[in-house]
Length: 253
Image (tube, rainbow, N blue to C red; front, side, top):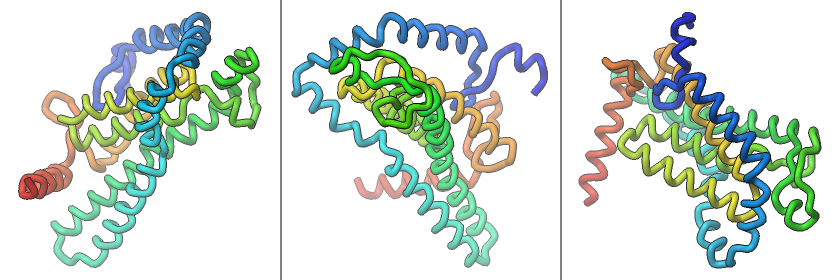
């Protein structure tokens, strides 16, 4: 990476350029939230009616990594095994791309998940329920108890990483996927599992890590390529699979 590119900023998910100033502003706002917003908001949410909590609990499960790790791994293994039996070069290339795409979805959730779990243990931030029940608000670094694994939010990280990874294959659904991920993040706050800064940090990390993973795949000529205007695009095999899925869906209507 040349110095001029670094001065302009860095790439986040979707091939978008993010100025370093924006990153500094985001980190500053997270610190402001920790100091002034997290505790009052958590106390206010703890007094919300049960029907509101029940409404948000519906999407809470979408933040579990199993929903993405297992399908990604199965697609990667099944398509990879099928490609070995193909004699036709075009079919073999299509299946290898599909196998790589499954592995990408797996890694897009697994890598950030490992990082978030490491940060959780290192930071040792108490969850909101300790604030509302015991009045404790703070950090106990390297505390292995789940009640001190609030920062950052694992469910939010999974939801945002999965949304960004899937949006690379379905660009027109990017907004809907991110809204759904935001709903999962809001559910974690309403259910009293995380503070505002926890879920915002997870979202920020997701954009950065998925952006790095996209660039890595593009540089290795896997899954993605670069469009005419520098945007991220699927390779030819990926566009073929997308057309086939669209045709299959149209036939079912």
